[in-house]
Image 1 (cartoon, rainbow, N blue to C red):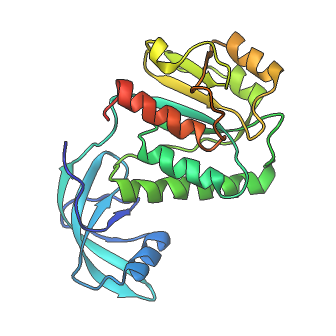
Image 2: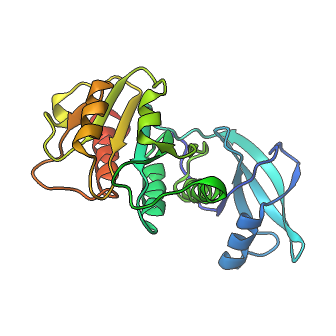
Length: 245
């Protein structure tokens, strides 16, 4: 495993070949200002393909931030356990928290869902804006944790539409307080899809539909976890039991 470099990391959606000179995106440029970096400071750049490049800042101005790409190397820090998270949209900044921490814990994709008890309802132009925001949260988490591949945040789906879509082969689990078994009592086959309900939980009908669609009802001890806590507990447990932790 290649260690994460000490220099600040920035995502840059551009060819990062050795010797190239690239303009950093506006979000990364703001981060450069926050960190008070200077021309000549070392940075690490990645474009989401599993590689990363060392670089040097060569221009910092009102027009933007420019970096020179130096050495490029393979540094794929993905978990060998592929986990897809289907998360009911949380209220406020809780969804940002889930996306950030799920990314750090190695999730492969995130599918936001709207269920019967969901507090947040998103549609139209606002849905696209929210998706862009959530994807930026994931990018920032990758910059922080050292991942060089960006987990995609999928367009928000209604719960019924999600169940009707073809799902990857493997093990699918739905987290419920009174599930039939714990994670230790199953032998999951990757990829693993983890389904998490909203603040008020899935309705009885939704849970029945999920089980009918092949989801295993899984519990996490005698305590009820919040919608933003449950997915992180599940991801951490799965990585500890079967992944790279």
